Image 1 (cartoon, rainbow, N blue to C red):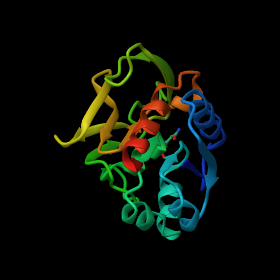
Image 2: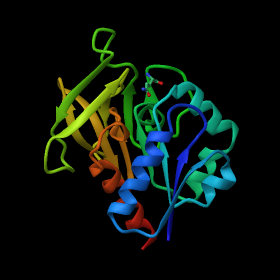
Image 3: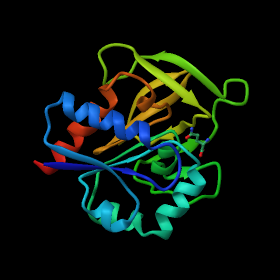
Image 4: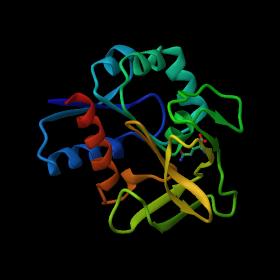
Amino acid sequence: MIKIGILDLQGDVSEHLEMTKKTTRKMNLESEVSTVKTSAEVAKCQGIIISGGESTVIGRLIQENGIDQVIKENKIPVMGTCAGMVILGQETDYDQPLLGLIPMKVKRNGFGRQKASFEAELELKITENHYPGVFIRAPYALTVSKEAVPLGKIHDKIIAVAYKNHIATAFHPELTHDTKIHEYFIKEVLNCVE
Ligand code: GLN
């Protein structure tokens, strides 16, 4: 039985909750998927998902609630989407609290005003077919250290990165019907518990 927590501090969590439930059903996994707010709740999870929202607010609340310590001490795999990608990075172009679990520097709102929101078919290293990318004021990875794996690019910008059991995507896989990214993450979580 694995427990996946959708971090519910700020931002849009309900779509991730539904998508993760859908994915575990599809994988025939005995699992519990729920939203989590406190470090005690996070400590009971084998995987954590950080949704889109405002990365400055989510990062601050993670720190204030001691969630960063629990994630690091328990080596919990984290999937971060959009604002979650920013938080997974080690550095951004702003001064803000980060988890720093993936050795990359992230540029926030990296696609400018005109392209603040857009959709694009993505070629990703971890999916066989094109993946429908939904970008909303999305970040991208400016630099990725050589231990981490860039998974795809758009307009020459890195929009997904994997490192150890963590994955960051600039886009919103929870807003599509394609469970491939969630499946990838849950397999990483399973690798850690086995
Ligand atoms: N631009 C936001 C940030 O950097 C992220 C936007 C989103 O998560 N949709 O916090």
